Image (cartoon, rainbow, N blue to C red; front, side):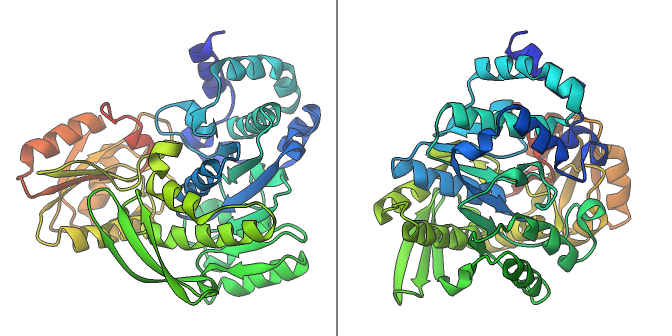
Amino acid sequence: MNYQETLQYLYNHLPMFSRVGAIAYKKDIHNTIALCERLNNPQNNFKSIHIAGTNGKGSTSHMLAAILQTEGYKVGLYTSPHIKDFGERIKINGKMIDEQFVIDFTEKTKNICNDIKPSFFELTVAMAFEYFSKEQVDIAVIETGLGGRLDSTNVIHPILSLITNIGLDHTQLLGNTFEEIAFEKAGIIKSNTPCIIGETLPSTLPVFEKKASEMNAPLLIANDYYECIKWEKDQQHLFCFLLNKKLNQTEKFSIDLTGNYQIKNLIPVLTACTLLNEKGIEIKNSAIQYALSNSKKITGLRGRWDVISVDPAVIYDVAHNKDGISSVLKQLNQEYPTSHYHFVIGFVKDKDINSVLECLPQTATYYFTNAHIERALSCKDLKQMAADKQLIGESFEDVNNAIKEAKRNAAQKDVIIVLGSFFVLSEIEDF
């Protein structure tokens, strides 16, 4: 098989959560353990950092990988899902996984897959570990796919764990309360391994403290280390002025990820750098500064408040749950307070769509669309659900047609924003 044939084999022969949803979710990690054992446990051959959270874990992973790479380390990065290319999931120093390795690994593991019957995610996790081991990375940043405790990535023994925040997402699998979801995310806390918490809630902090105590793991609250004093921005960068509480001095950082919500991600990233330095993994301030200013170029991260054009402004963002979309709406109101908004939105069926729709403005114009995957909510069903919330617009089977219509309707000072799903953004032709 060539590369494209191999990808089609992986997509079509293995249950894939991003396409079919909960039926692909395995509520244990036995398959991953079995896969890794058959591969001689490649995950034990490199240092790793494990990152979980409801929102921000992708941005956090990419920023941290960019910093480590800039410092001179050979850095593996595993994230999901991808937007355009499967190779986005598995990178070393910003370069996507070698296509021949994907072909060879898939062929090599066919018999193993017949025995174990893994999901797509389980196999790609094992693929990442094997690739990072073969390429002898110095350290790998590993993002969980879903939850933490039962996530396939949770077979690693990292030098550091990081949980960005807790929100209500994937409630049908992780629980309906903040405490239940925090319990699942806290499952990445390992014995005698420090864990950083990016944001806490009164209901989630005791969950993290209990798990950390059980595992004899140091628990670090990022806001005890840094606090945002003020921020400014231009079209290319977000400038953050943070109080370093340990040094009692203000430090300025420039980030090329211009979503205001990135401030929340920056604080645990910097806390992680402090801790890594203490553990003997040297990271100079100059590396931090350069990497944060160039993280998109270094890692290839996309879909986080990407301003594609101006007059009218066109923005792409992968926000897909209430907390994520609320952050986007807050930034829209701050930066474009008098503009008319055109929302091109599409979701998957298993999201709490009603709670998202309730926070969207009734004064905007809507273009309801869907990705072409089994898990997608049809644009016609979304249009009806939105109408019940007094959100009015038309439905489009293809996101590109929806964007074209929005551009036809938008005045020069309007804003067009596309959000709701990684999978909707993946089908945009010019992205």
